[in-house]
Amino acid sequence: MCELLGMSANVPTDIVFSFTGLMQRGGRTGPHRDGWGIAFYEGKGLRLFQDPAASAESEVARLVQRYPIKSEVVIGHIRQANVGRVCLANTHPFIRELWGRNWCFAHNGQLAGLDTTPGFYRPVGDTDSEAAFCDLLNRIRSTFPEPVPVEALLPTLVEACADYRRKGVFNCLLSDGDWLFSFCTTKLAHITRRAPFGPARLKDAELTVDFQAETTPNDVVTVLATEPLTTNETWSLYQPGDWSLWRNGECIAQGRREPDAISETTP
Amino acid sequence: MCELLGMSANVPTDIVFSFTGLMQRGGRTGPHRDGWGIAFYEGKGLRLFQDPAASAESEVARLVQRYPIKSEVVIGHIRQANVGRVCLANTHPFIRELWGRNWCFAHNGQLAGLDTTPGFYRPVGDTDSEAAFCDLLNRIRSTFPEPVPVEALLPTLVEACADYRRKGVFNCLLSDGDWLFSFCTTKLAHITRRAPFGPARLKDAELTVDFQAETTPNDVVTVLATEPLTTNETWSLYQPGDWSLWRNGECIAQGRREPDAISETTP
Image (tube, rainbow over all chains, first blue to last red; front, side, top):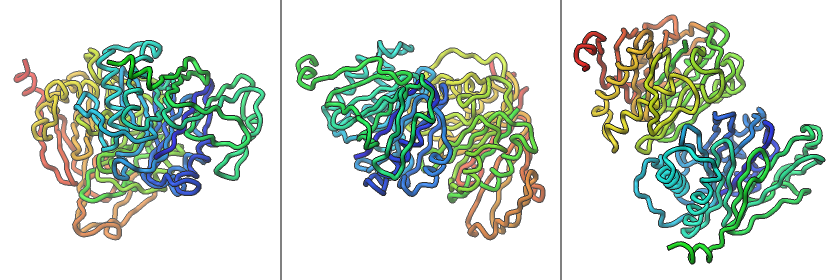
């Protein structure tokens, strides 16, 4: 299994605090030693830092912790390999260009029996996760050859996630740099921080931050993670089938896809 | 204009020495202040470090200098913007997946009047360089929907480069992680280092390295750059129309595309 980290904010925000917590789970407080990655959007551009080494011992991870990169959308991941060997090509998040935008995807879980008909997008590595991402983009592309607003895309996204869920565990984060989408089949949590800001204390490291000192009253910052990263705040836990869509730190759509309802309505 | 750096080697090799020289030209010994990037292949995986800040002052560039990443194929670039504003999305090298491999491209020059018919691959930023890269991949994809060996691809590659050359200056580096291709219309040089190795002295920084101490007798390492990076070695300079193809540090094909011959043979 793996762990996910996502952020959506209405101002460029550094995620060093949450990242520091997550990185400990890559070999120190957690068993996810098989690589890590984090992608920061800067406008339509995307900075990706990755390492197949354990995050708790990674030189590149230390750079990311020392050098605060401000971003409005972030997707991070630490890996405990199940499908696919430990190497850079198998390290999340995965990136592809669709409609002239960088799409970024990370997955927690395990899928069996994915249809791997070669489509336009093809996996570079050999993980089930990248295969699912390519399949998802191939579906989107064949349904919508030209760009559509994310609201029009949502039914396709949710339907694809419901399909992957039938093949195993599929907690995921997806973004095109404008919005951030999540789907939960077993474990995912979120917290939205806004004024009045208070202190937060990490669960995985001896670190407390006072967000009051680092924010303005208008800032809205949502963080998503496989499990809550702090001990003194209340995180909302998603239920199986819950999906959410975020822009500028705010939830702009959410819902629950019941497995039974799916099997009744899907041919 | 910009500057290019490429490497092809038969063993994983760090490029810190050449990178250190190139980075000086990004604001110290050269005017290329508008961002830089470098991509290191690790198998089929690709590590990309980029920054829209001047390389001579970039924190991420300092990491790359401190932390030797060993790779068999590298493409680097420093930018002096002409088309497209200074931002991450306009920073070379550019990456796309084709046939389940990461393709990487960097360009030195300026193109006018490119055909920008939207194809499958679309630019994320607004540089002429990324538009040419997308056009090149669209041509390859439409000619070869399924993977072919690079030898079969060469005529398409060279023909596309000859077309771009008609629209301006087009010095470029391209790789899929296995081979490294170059095309020169104005400025490009290369050097192949093999036993017996000797010392090399950078042109742009007070730095000498003794490759003898860092290599084995079987190592073969070719470096390509817009202009020679060292003062005590003999670099081979390419002429307009020269292209070359490298694998494991060795040149596996090369040729010259004469502009007159092109206009006579192309309808």
